[in-house]
Image 1 (cartoon, one colour):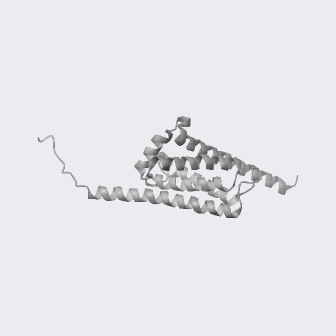
Image 2: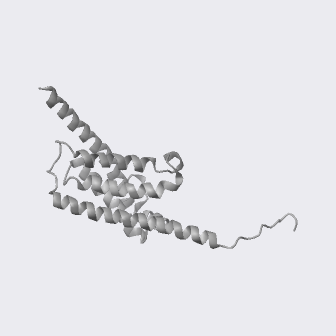
Length: 187
C-alpha cells in the first residue's frame, strides 16, 4: 500500500467518522422533536416552543426543523444524495445559531456553541464531500444547486421570522406603560 492510498483511506475514514457523529446526533435530535424519542419533547411541545420564538405556525415549523435534522442526519451518515444531508444540517443549524444568539456563545448559558459547531462541521462536509465510503454517488450538480436554493430560502425565511418576532417583542416592551413602584410596607 502506498503512502498516498494510506492517506486517502485515512481521510475517507475520518470523513466517515465525522458524518456518523454529526449525522447521528442530528438524527437523534430530530427524532426527539418529531416523535418524543430519547426523552425529547415531541412535536406538540416542540411546536409550542417554536411558536414562542416567533417561528409560526409553530407545529409545522417544528416539523420542518425536526425533519431536516432527522433526514439530513441520516443522509449525512449514509452519504446518500450528497450534498442534501449537509445542506439540511447547515440550514437548520444556521437557524438554531440565531435562536440561541441572545444567550451568547457558550452552551452553558443556552448559547449557540453547539449549533455553530454543528454548522461548521456540516459546512466542512459540504466543502470536502462525503469521501469514498458512501452508499450512493453525489447528486447531479443541477439538483444540488436547486436543493441549495430551496434550503437557503427556507433558512432565510426562518431567520427573518425569528428576527421579526424579536423586534416586535422589543417594540411591544418599549411601548408598555411603566407601572409606578408601590411601597406596600407604607400602606
